[in-house]
Image (cartoon, rainbow, N blue to C red; front, top):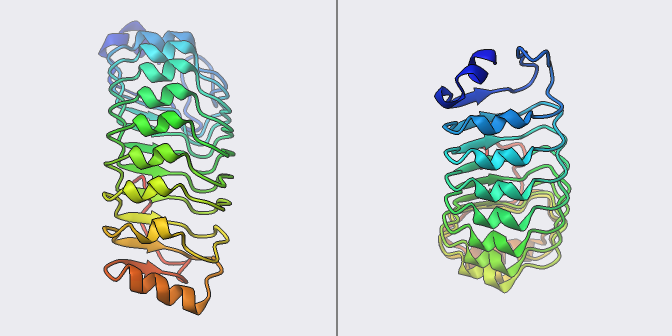
Amino acid sequence: MQDALDNPLDVLILEMSMNTRISMGLHELESLPRVIGLFQNLEKLNLDGNQLTSLPKEIGQLQKLRVLNLAGNQFTSLPKEIGQLQNLERLDLDGNQFTSLPKEIGQLQNLRVLNLAGNQLTSLPKEIGQLQNLERLDLAGNQFTSLPKEIGQLQKLEALNLDHNRFTIFPKEIRQQQSLKWLRLSGDQLKTLPKEILLLQNLQVLRLYSNSFSLKEKQKIQELLPNCEIDFESEGKSESSLTE
């Protein structure tokens, strides 16, 4: 770590994941020092599996950052300066304690992958619709009951994971996502599939494990999405993560 501090502009990748010892005497990071802002050529920052609860505003100075991994910490919020990371392509926030996201998340115009699984989110800011290059969005294991209508503006979205939430309604705008190929709605206590989902004619894979569909409803879904691989039962089936 000391070498990195001595020559911060030479550092492109900084790994500080679980149990990594650094020369500052920390074993599991509880805070990120403000000097992180000195690493202005940094492209990848991995902080997963620590005890972090917040980021310093200086994180916004990492203008060349492409990958930011904050998974498995104790974050409840992000600073608004997160929106300054204009080159960010991947943001992993899974396994934290987020209850909300700042509206500045919508400023990440180059973001392609956003992983929010395993938090305590009940809603997304409407600015989520500004992520015009987003391809993969993982919202599994939160407390959503609905999605903002702006979700329909994500015209490049190919994969959406909504497993294990509490959905009662879907915005009609979701039908606009004709680029969507992969959708998960397992464990959402659904008895019927909203017509907006049934209009996604380019879907290739639809996972619907652990819901309460009748045989008649299952047949209806299969008839209306004839070109889609639909799975109602195989919860134990091995499958790659959405955000891998």
